[in-house]
Length: 126
Image (cartoon, rainbow, N blue to C red; front, side, top):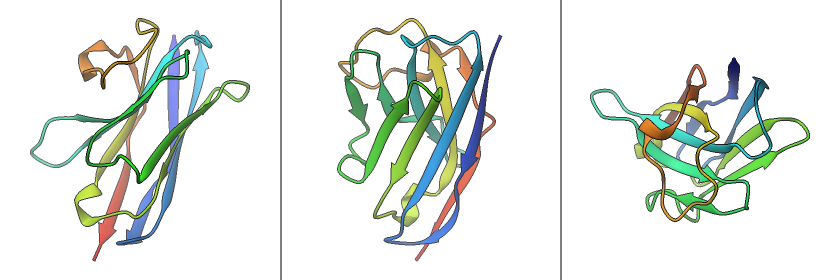
């Protein structure tokens, strides 16, 4: 069994920064592919960023250059550093894990991920 526990998020003025964390416990592996997704009310869950064991990363076009995904294997923790936040970044953010992806050529769909965090709200006001 795998558990993903998120922290971080909150409210921030446009242009500000926030950092999300996601601690994994249970049957996790260094080879896991980890990702961040977000979901706005009335919309489908969309990929934000992902990182694979081989170091490949992928970002949504809307966040590229502003968000940075990283993983501390020793701490079993995934991070999402979000800079220059915009009101359109307002959403519930989720971390996710799968052991079925070795490298990334594009953002994987949510359906490929086996485990999910509880979600954390990010609100950006102008």
